[in-house]
Amino acid sequence: MARASRPAFIPPMTATVVTTLPEGERWLYELKLDGYRALVIKDGSRVRILSRNEKDLTSSYATVAAAGRRLNAEAAVVDGELVAVDADGRPSFQALQHRSGSSGYVVVFYAFDLLHLDGDDLTGRPLDERRRRLPDVIRDSGLLLSQELPGTAAQVVAAVQGLGLEGVIAKRRDSRYDAGQRPGTWVKLKLDKQQEFVVGGYRPGTHGVDSLLVGYREGRALRFAAKVRAGFTPHLRRDVFETVKGLHATTCPFADLPSVKPSRWGSGVTAEEMKEMQWLKPAVVAQVRFVEWTADGHLRHAAFLGLRHDKDARQVRRET
Image (cartoon, rainbow, N blue to C red; front, side, top):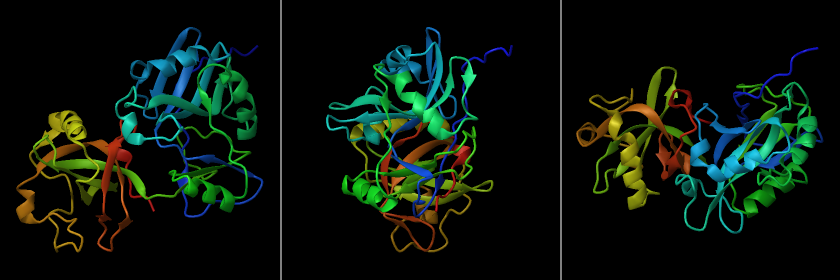
């Protein structure tokens, strides 16, 4: 008899960015949740919450860990998203930055996949089968179920847009769980323009940080994308400064600064402005919302949403 496996970290499967959702009965649709991707791993009385890059978040989200102990299984690995929600269930990525939630917000875990159950590795099973077993496992635990959205692709997009939410995930019902891969059987449609960027420097200010300089990886090079000043509060500026102050560097990490020509939207950095900046080792990731990419490859009207503790700066690319 084969020995049952133990629940362990599984690198999360990820979705490909698309501009239109796939149609047909082979696909199911879910909300794209504005939070941190994480796994809840239960092994007997021990429960861990691990981020997508295997960082241990258990002590930061004690109420979610307590819910994980109430799972209806001796051993399980549940894939999902940590989200800060208000009384109406609306998510806020910025509120999630405070770990236990901001005033008026609570941190919850939306489960959308079941990867391991009582010694059985389920990653080779179809998504439909994994999801059928998920409600019984999380029932009455305190973990929430990410519900399938009914309707056609167009109806789903219209409904999500009407609520002002971030986007939609579409998944093939027969998809296996390809750990750590982006195979195209899961896709995501973003209804507002935002993505993660590497923080390569900042302009010092009264509360530590006046604006951030962010970019993305292109091969081995770090390309400049924007100066980000909007979206901050004094509290956030101090929090970001505390995070980055140990990463000070003497040289600019961006391969394409200073800007060769002035930017129409003022998003470049001139040689004179370079003297005002504090450079950083490119290790921190920020989530940024913006209106559009300009013709010269910069962001127009960029706004800071929060730091991403669940993303690896080496993996950040420009999304299209």
